[in-house]
Length: 408
Ligand SMILES: Cc1cc2nc3c(=O)[nH]c(=O)nc-3n(C[C@H](O)[C@H](O)[C@H](O)COP(=O)(O)OP(=O)(O)OC[C@H]3O[C@@H](n4cnc5c(N)ncnc54)[C@H](O)[C@@H]3O)c2cc1C
Image (tube, rainbow, N blue to C red; front, side, top):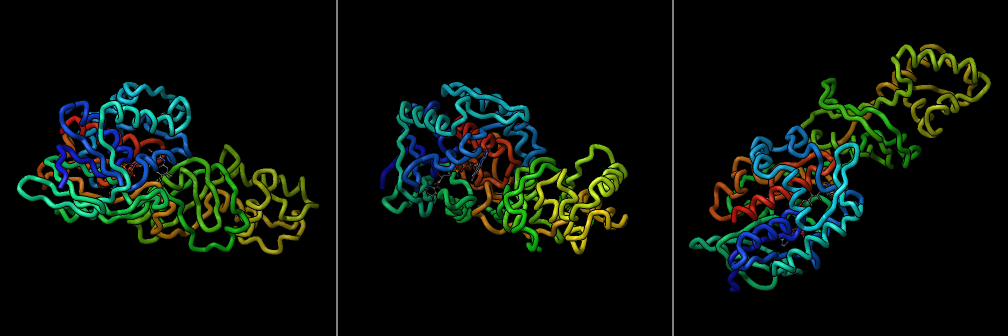
């Protein structure tokens, strides 16, 4: 067995940041990252569409997060605010930019810059990085952790689990780390995909509008009960609703009996009456055209036709002049409140993060140390907390990694 002082399982966002702080704090101790993939930080490179949205101006506001660690999160951000996270990056030499919505990116707009600066620092500090090494299990005997990998066994007194979640398995993610934590006695809040598209139940109209993007307001309901509303660009895919606003609703769906998403695609700034008036006016102006062209001034044609079909308008090859007032009312209703029954997300392949993980009350937020197993620390997505789109998840990964590193 190879003995080390501090072992970090998982060289992702939280593990790399943790290793930097751990070695800075303990220059004379051996700090090792065990990473199952051939390179550390693989997921980081895919974040923010390759731009790495690493933090957010509102990252310390716990309203943007979900999960059993939410109450403890306040303590985490008191210890390590987003300003401290950005200071840490500044110390690594990273220059950042914030967009109008508070999302923070590297000035280069390339995730590789973030990863390179973390890697250079790890090299300079002489953190040992052991790649292509899968940790199969961990046991604790006489105050020592025995970390069994597919190559060899390691022993250490202090262990960090920063293995992330099963979201986006094509980037190498799985739930092996969560299983390790479960075997060490932790309660795991069930895992489900979050920040993901929502598959619709009735797909009949979807192929015709696949690829369309349209700004609007989206509301999630459980039956008739409003759960949450978001605004932004809605993307229609072959079988699902997608886009950041949909992603942000997706974490709530798993708890609902009858999840329904309503799209409000109103293009008239004023009210319903105004919309009705505009459409009636257009019935006169464009009376000779086919009904399929009725919404052409507002939406791409295939989206307009899908709205007409959803509004129950029959015989679309009629002239626009033949539209009855009650048909125009139905079109207005659909534009304002286009309902899609959606399924509970089950597929991790399209999810950016995972909801669930180690139960929040089992982790001390001041240190991120397990309350059940001394000298075991947990950071990043393995914890039952997940944030909205916009840099919240990476910010938590980095902040929790910093806290662990400083606690070791
Ligand atoms: C496509 C995509 C885009 C995203 N974009 C953003 C964004 O722009 N902003 C944002 O805030 N969040 C984003 N996220 C979420 C963010 O990437 C994660 O929340 C974050 O990476 C979690 O960090 P982590 O350290 O917990 O896990 P990870 O970064 O996933 O790292 C875990 C590491 O542990 C390793 N590992 C796992 N199990 C073992 C084992 N048994 N043995 C050895 N090694 C193991 C893995 O290989 C991996 O390298 C995105 C996610 C995806 C999938």
